[in-house]
Length: 258
Image 1 (cartoon, rainbow, N blue to C red):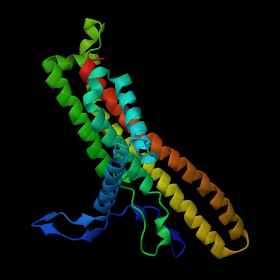
Image 2: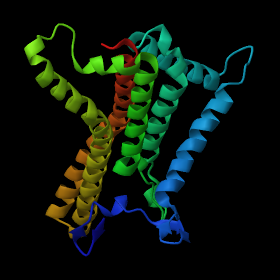
Image 3: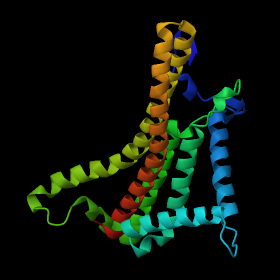
Image 4: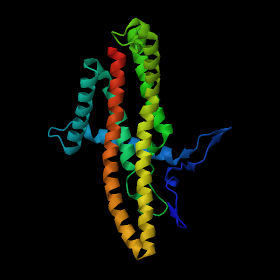
């Protein structure tokens, strides 16, 4: 945000209460973050509801839903195998929710005074919860299917006996870092792109107000922001795909003990 010549690119990530509510010392207010998560949920549910109409001649919505579910089903089949079919609903929900949350944060709604989109996936509190949810599912599935034998995941097949203690510790640390890296990757990608757009947007405004050389700076910044927006659109899709893909790979480890 540009105010009095200063740039505050972090202001866009501030969570503000819409309906303040406190229960004792706990703040459970309905916030901008919750509102945009609800918007993403409504879009996903609406997309599925419209696309799941069984028409004799499939329409565009139905073809889009079938294509997307087929894409997720193929991802799960390739990475997990036939037993992965039971996880398709979860992976599909995860992918579509993250994708929609990423995209709606890029909508140019800031042209409406006092209104701007909020990218919920730029909050580590959300991406971390999604990562912990996926990680918890991996652990539960692993122990449910293999019992204590699931711990053999930390000792790769063929490891020399003298190296087992060291390798087990390294593998365990690597395993425990998974939810952190999974949530951090999405969070950093989203927040970095929005900071760049905010900074170049401020350059454009300040440049146009400055005149002379400022116009040249503003025009150059406009070209940069077009490139950043295009890159950010690509990152929205890639990050949703990577999050879903890594979740299937982690589930594959839990099921097949790779």
